[in-house]
Length: 147
Image 1: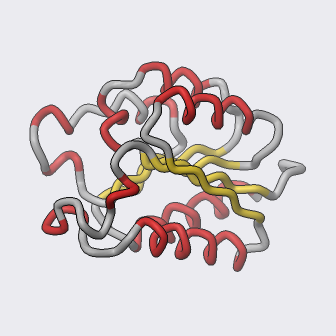
Image 2: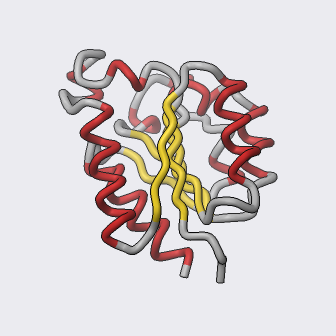
């Protein structure tokens, strides 16, 4: 059992635009609302919660590195980095805790280029296609695997 009780939520590029960016795909809920749901789920399960959104790959990698030996789990919506960032995948592979890949939409049901995840091989599991509810579901899945 882990000695830390922190769940780190990371959100990648363009997720700061939730609520206004392509609402027909991503819905009208804001990032703040999604993060609030995740935080509530974490705290309800007795965990501390931290969040970072960045449009910069290096900042997300630095956050993953800083999480090593400090947090119990990482939930990450990598956005478009899902399909391109071997650097984020390598950073996640070096993290020993629970790791959940999260997507609002279902990338497998979208354009061909979105169907490949370089993140998927290094995470514990993936939650995709449930919109805002996915944030809560991802944290609940995470807390279920930690203890």
